[in-house]
Image (tube, rainbow, N blue to C red):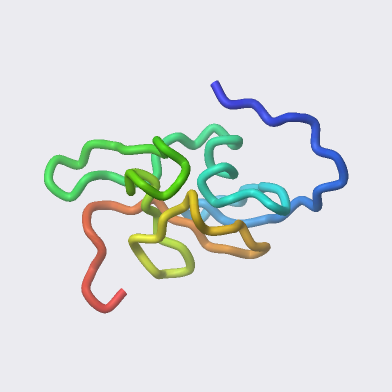
Length: 98
């Protein structure tokens, strides 16, 4: 469904997604990099475990919550991708102290 436009001079950035190597581009948000790589689930709900994915991509809906470098409840649509980031699908609610 989502396809990248041809990249003009944007530096590739490597990150991990649930421990697997992944790649995005300089200027991408975490959510954009996930969608472009075909990964549509960012989190699972705390009550039912229903998969949720990026929806509004502007910081309003909170469906793009992911764990970034060990910190949960990060809005993937508002965080710029950085080289070496560790991104994980968030399972349920954020743990206290993490």
